[in-house]
Image (cartoon, rainbow, N blue to C red; front, side, top):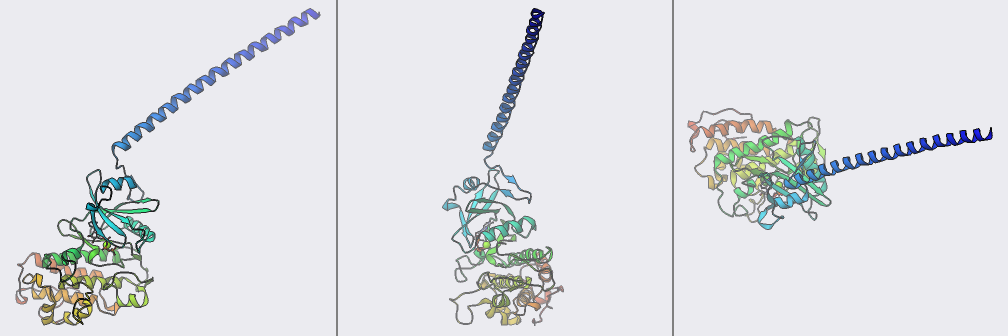
Length: 396
Ligand SMILES: Nc1ncnc2c1ncn2[C@@H]1O[C@H](COP(=O)(O)OP(=O)(O)OP(=O)(O)O)[C@@H](O)[C@H]1O
Ligand SMILES: [Mg+2]
């Protein structure tokens, strides 16, 4: 009996052994298969990554488009676009820092602003510019193409405006005494209209309205055909939704352009921009800078000097930029002077809306295109505009 039991036990042990061996072998095969599959997959993934890297390198300027439609550049991309931020590429220097001309790998010309950390303006402005310009689109506003934020280095990339800032063309020698401007009357009127449309868009077509806060001739940029776009929203403030509402803020802006109530109280409204616009209109009319300490007493501050003359027909002729002599009709000059006078008046509420300014300038620009350069009052079939003056009448 004991012999039969031993044989049974041995048989069972044999079966268990076989099962163990089979299970072990199956596990080994499964492990081997799993490992092979893992190797196959990881090989495939690394090949894909290699290919991706290769194509990134091929197009050095791969630009990641963010949700807000702006491109995000690496510092390296902008470094190579501007020839290593070389001196010959410098096209300007403002409160934000140096401005460089650059060419992207797709051949597009751009202006690259490199934030100067020692500059008076800073990160807040960078964020403001990016945030605002990503949602504002108008043919009369300078387009922001993208930006780069690389640790401390902040850069803004704009469309390139071949003729730079308006002030360079109004004052070729650096200030009013530096030589005659080559900008003719027709071009100046068109620039005035296009810049007005830029502000009109900010004030009246955006909700809540946007106050530029640093509107001036150097922030009006000109393309290769001298078409104008308004630039620099770094100082912009989103205005109050309420009619007549204002935003309280520390006084910024540029000397000579700041509205008196804003300078005194810090209360900022869209009418502060209208004042600054009036100063630019005066620059276009007179060819004089807003503040010129080299001028004789009483003539240093453009607004104070020009204002009493703007509403007197005889005196308007005296303040006009001599470089434009013979290019404008008296009627047009008087009318533009009247618009400027309304924009720069000290009482903010009486200043016009930018929409009124645009409406008043449109017929002048159209009229000018369809007539010869020199006209007289009597030959002009006057058009009425919101701020319009009748031919020959002095303004009030
Ligand atoms: N997009 C652009 N295309 C061509 N030139 C430009 C462009 N942006 C700026 N510039 C040039 O760089 C100059 C300096 O511009 P920037 O805006 O930095 O300073 P600013 O307008 O003089 O002063 P602020 O910093 O107060 O605006 C301009 O006057 C213009 O000549
Ligand atoms: Mg500027």
